[in-house]
Each structure stands twice: as structure tokens, then as C-alpha cells.
Length: 405
Ligand code: SAH
Image (cartoon, rainbow, N blue to C red; front, side, top):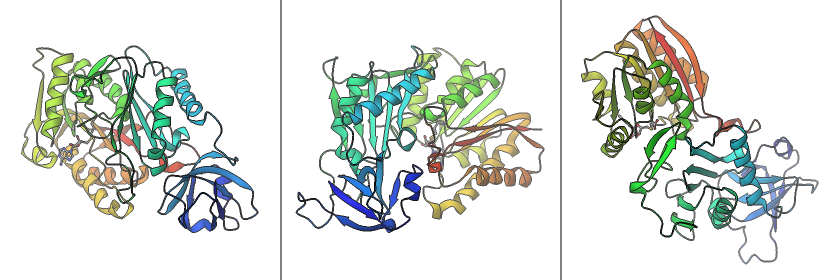
């Protein structure tokens, strides 16, 4: 195996289990005999050693500022059965937390660094696992991962791969970035168009093929349940609704009416399908394909409960300033239009915007409008999206529930 030797003192973060090795920390690379080229191949397993030649761990090599993502600390080889064991361990945690129940067969199984598998996301929808690789190494290992999933997770019969948006686009990737990796049991992979998965007793059509991310935003499950608790008798606006997650919970919670808005017509079609499935002939719900700012500017209706769950406004650090301006603008609009005694659920899923910066943007929005606003809850990502304490970069979802006088 290729060995990566670090510069003196650069082993310290690895000894504290932070899983990334930055390219600037590398002193030299010792290739094994199998290499024809002068550099390691992207995605191959490498052993990282301190300047004193102490093995620190094994990880995936990649070109870029993060050169190695460590999979196993303190070893020179990946342990036998590594993939099976890691995946089984992640499943056991979710089972112990009570997340996997007949009425809840939708959950995130692998959350990258939070499950000690940097670069890998796996979401479970009923009998299907959707795998997303964020590193070339995970792409290279995708077949082992798929086999471990069907071997270790009792309900998983199909594994679908969807990494067209997440792999570094310059990497010379061998093999398809999307497609079926594995199917057991049911002959013939079912079409995602007719696929239903259950979250807390509500059914959602999951279209991993054409949908965003792996098909659904599992990370809002607990926050949706909180909306259900507050929805009774309220006129609700679910802005940036995607397939209607928050809307279904609000309807079940007894909302007087629910308006769902998303700029994507495809998303709006799915909201309507999901509402019809769970609440047939219910006239309380209306869906609009519209831009958020246009809708908020034109709509004269007031609401008692508003949910704002926009896409990541800042995808990179250099976009943070504009993102904060965006958060302030949209929150000011909502704080302005909500009825007295209204409740606003407002979120940011930009990893680059931390919770203090987000809170400051919402504070600025409240101050701009000049209404009395109190914080009722501070929300975050759920327990199947854990944050590895040694890798604080894994924290990305934050939300505030506000009471507007
Ligand atoms: N709340 C959703 C997830 C939201 S993801 C859930 O619980 O599942 C963000 C959504 O915002 C996407 O569906 C995207 O289509 C939508 N969106 C992006 N820009 C928008 C805009 N300018 N106006 C309205 N919706 C927008």
C-alpha cells in the first residue's frame, strides 16, 4: 500500500480523530511497487504515517486540498470485513435509538464523518438504499458497500447509486455515477415512480431518480413533528416545500389550511400526490409553483404559522455574505406578514453559515421589521445525521422557532 508521510507535528489532528489530511500537511509519498504512475491513484487506499513513521490510519486518497479521508485510525491495513462492520454498527445505533419502526422505514443510515465513513451518504427508503458518494474512494468501493448493505440491513433488497452531483467533477471516474448496484429478493427493480416510503406514519412518494439529493429530506423529520404539534387551527404557509414534508404534518396536526410553495413544478406535482395519498378529498391544502420572493410579495393572505426551509444559500465560504443577506430578506418578509401571535419556523442548511451567523441574520430581520420576536426553540439536524465531535464541520442544519407578537 502507498504510504503518506506527514510533516512533523501534522499528526496531532489525526490523533484527535479528525478524519481529514490536508495536502499541505504531507512531507512525502512512498508509492508501493504496483504503481506505474508517479502518484497514487484517486480513490485508492493509502496508509498515513507521522514524520516519525508511526502509522496513524488508512484512508482514501483524493486530489485536492483534502488529500486523505481516514476510514480507520491507528492501523496499517483496512480491517477484514470493514464495510460490513461499519454499516452494521450504524444500523445498530439507529435501531437502539428507536428510529426504525413499521411506521418509520425512512431514515439516514450513513451520515459521512458522523458515522465514521467520510464521503459516504446512505439513505434508506423502505426496502431500498440510496447511496451517494462524495469522494472518489467511496465511488471505487461502491460494490463492497452495496454488498454490505444487502447483507447487513434486513429490509434492504435494492441498492441504487446516485452520485452524479456529488463526485468531484474533474476526477476521471471509471464506471457509472448513477444506476442500480444490487438487487436481491424482488426480481426486477421497481420504478421509482411508484415507490412509497413511510415517515412517522405518513407516506411519501420517493423519486430518487429524478428528485433532489437522494430523493427526500430526511433531516427535517423531528422538526416536522414539532410543526404538527403547533398546527391545530392555524393557517399555514410551507415555503420551499419540496415534496411537502412539513405540509403533511401540519395537515395531520389539524391545520385550518396549508399553502405549499416551491419554485419547482415537479416538486409541486409530488406535494399534490402525497397530500392526495394521505388525506384523500381534503380541501384544506393548496400548492403553488412560484418563486418564494414573488409569492411573499404578491400574497396578501396572512398566516399564523410559516415554515421557511430554503436551499443552501451559501454552497461555499465565499458566498456567505450574500447568503446572510438572503436569509435576512426572506425572514424579514415572513416576520412582516405573519399574524400577531404567529409562529415562524426558519431554517438554514448551509454548512458554511454557522448557527450564530444565522441567528444574527434572523435578528437583523426582526429588528428591520420592528416587531417583538421571541425564540421558542433552537432546532438542528436529527439523531440519524450525527455530528462526530472531532469533526464539527458535520453540523449543517439549524433552525429557530420564533413567536411573533
Ligand atoms: N422543506 C423541504 C425541503 C426544502 S429543499 C422538505 O421538508 O422536504 C429546498 C426547496 O426550495 C427545493 O425544493 C427547491 O426547489 C426550492 N426552491 C429553490 N429556490 C426557490 C425559490 N426561489 N423559490 C421557491 N422555492 C425554491
